[in-house]
Structures are given as structure tokens and as C-alpha cells.
Length: 278
Ligand code: HEM
Image (tube, rainbow, N blue to C red):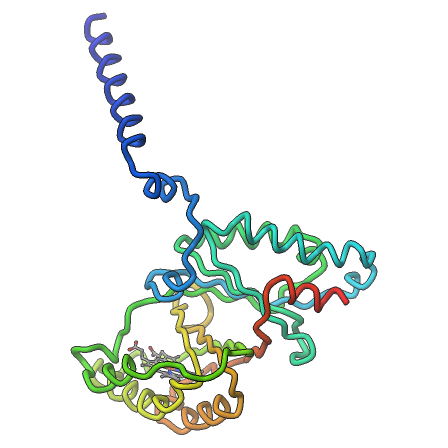
């Protein structure tokens, strides 16, 4: 009896201490603890350990039978959904209709926790447009610190990477290219892979001024090794960049380079859905 009294007393002390600990947190930290702070775009797009989920959609014919007022409301519905989840995911939409055969639009969802991206995508699939679209391709990956072109392993290229900024006009296009390498690549000695990646990096440096890039690692998370994502306003430069990379020896190890390569216009989510509602 005495023992259980002491036990209860201890439990109460712990509970009260926990309440005080939460109340003592500054307002911002409290918000962070409850997940009330919107995700910071610049930060999540730079951080390692961020999951990227790319989902490419093709609208069904039934979409045309949705009453036009409801199709128009679809843009507001998606906007509201993105706002609802702005504390846990960063969502971007891209318009591919008119450029691609197998898709009309795609989403990129960035999240610190993959489950949060999954929750968002599940809810998206329940919206009017989500219910009227089929997934053509879905890819998941995670961002990581540099493997090869680091300060220690490749100081000159690392410095060049850090010292050249994007100076082009605001990008109007995004391109997603999945890349997979063969077993021979993964069995090369580390020094050899470093050399190959230096040969990859050298010809790409002139394009830093007009192409923005982002790399997600997918090995084991998906049937590809990498999801490469680019933004540019200069598609001719981008075409030349790909031609340069086609002729570096690293390309001999690729078993997937695209398939699909997806080119879309960068628009606000609302404008993507509006364009598809016309
Ligand atoms: C401005 C243009 C580009 C620059 C500056 C660039 C630079 C780099 C650098 C520095 C790395 C090494 C990252 C590390 O150290 O871990 C890398 C990796 C990679 N890049 Fe590029 N790149 C560019 C364009 C492209 C393009 C167009 C593709 C192909 C579609 C591509 C595909 C890849 C892939 C798949 C990796 C990972 C390779 C691996 O870890 O085995 N890159 N890039």
C-alpha cells in the first residue's frame, strides 16, 4: 500500500515536471514540438536526410465529365490541402500536359519524414483531381551529403562548385531524370569512382550559371539509384549539358538514364490545376 502511494507520488511528480518543461519552452520551440511551423523552403531544399517523393500523373478521360464548376474548385481544393500540410511537407507541382505523352502533371513532395509525404499523397489521391488521375510513375529518394566531390577528396572541384552561382532568369522548366548504375560501377574501387565523378563534374561546371540541380539517392528505396532533378530557363544549355555528360566514361555504367525523362513547366500548384481544368 505504502509502496503504491510512493509510486503514484513519483508518477505525479514526473507528470507535473513534464507539463512545466513544455510550458517553459519558448513559443517557437513549442510550435516546433507540435509541428506548427511551416517548412522553410530554402532549408529543406538544402538539408541532407530529406525524402523526395515524385509522382507523375495522367488524367483519366472521366476528368472531362466532372462538371466544370467542380473542376474549377479542384485548384482551391489542392491549394487548401497544401496549406493544411505546410508544417510537414513542401509540395511543388509541374505541368507536363502538352509536352509529355504519358503524363499531365507531376508532384514533388519533400519531407523530413517519409511517412508525412505518404500521408500528403494519400490525401491528394482523395481530391477531385487525384481521384481522376492515374499514377504513371512514382519515385522516392533521400538527399545526402556529397560522396565524392568533397573538400577533402576533391578540393578544387569542390571549391568551383561552391563559387559559381545560378545567374540565369527564373527557371520556367523542371526536368526529372532517374539514373541507375550497373554492378560493375558499384564494384569499382572507391578511388576509381572518385576519378569518374571528377570527370562527370568537370564538364558540368560551366552550366552552374544556368542550370539548378538536386540529387536524391534511391538505391534500396526504389528501382533506381538516383533521382536527378533540374530547373532551368535555358533548355538549349540543358540539352548541351546532357550531350557533354553522354560522352564521359561514367555513362558506360548507366543502365537507366531517364525512362522516363519528364519535362514540365514550373507553375504554382493552383495554376497547374487551373490549366488542367480548362
Ligand atoms: C549543372 C550541372 C551538373 C553539375 C554541376 C553536376 C555535379 C555533380 C557532382 C559534383 C556530383 C557528385 C556528388 C557527390 O560528390 O556525391 C554529381 C553526381 C551525380 N550527377 Fe551530376 N551534375 C550536373 C548535372 C547532371 C546531369 C544532367 C545528370 C544526369 C541526368 C547528373 C547525374 C548525376 C548523378 C546520377 C550523380 C550521382 C552519381 C553517383 O553518386 O554515382 N548530373 N553531379
